[in-house]
Length: 234
Ligand SMILES: *Cc1c(COP(=O)(O)O)cnc(C)c1O
Image (cartoon, rainbow, N blue to C red; front, top):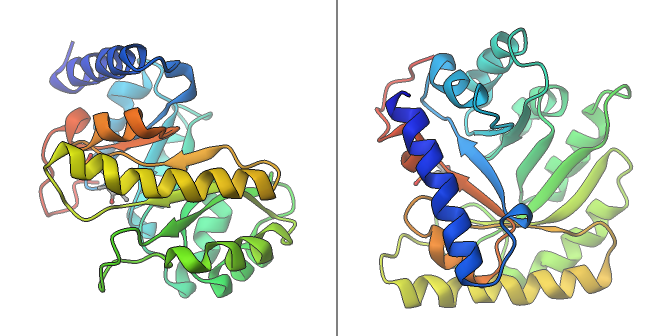
């Protein structure tokens, strides 16, 4: 087994352990392997062990990998998790199954118009700027319902829930507190709309807090692939 495969196996076990400790079924916690800056061969190392879902942050880099890997693993599910500029929305609509970073209704409309008719609706999450950081993408919590109402009406998008990237915080209790704010909004959203089943929270350094509070989707990069270089190793 390689370094990455070993990390991956250990991660699955860790998720299972934390889940059972907190009376959660790990089947309800989906793992997205975040492969930004990582090579196609790195990705295929865990695709060969059965990992299906991958997250990419940069449109061009992601599409290069999707097109290549498709011939080896045609059934992978690709999540766009980076900030999306409107001039790149068409590529996301055409190549990805999920876009987790909806933070403007304008982008949602573009993705809806650009989603090819032959494909299933694009699954989308509204990104919430939970820590109210100035430079972070995402909308403030007060606007979640306003944007959700509009996204729900778009036929080629399927609103599945919420995503957040909290401020970097190493204190466990503070991580939990921040994520609990998301759970409250998520539960309200579930009451109001159908198909809401996804709360995308948790990265390598706060995975436990995310599982404990109720995340249904983890986005993990470093703990699987190791630390990232700045250059793109496609
Ligand atoms: C990079 C990234 C991750 C993964 O972060 P790690 O700390 O490497 O696990 C998760 N979500 C988003 C949106 C990211 O950009």
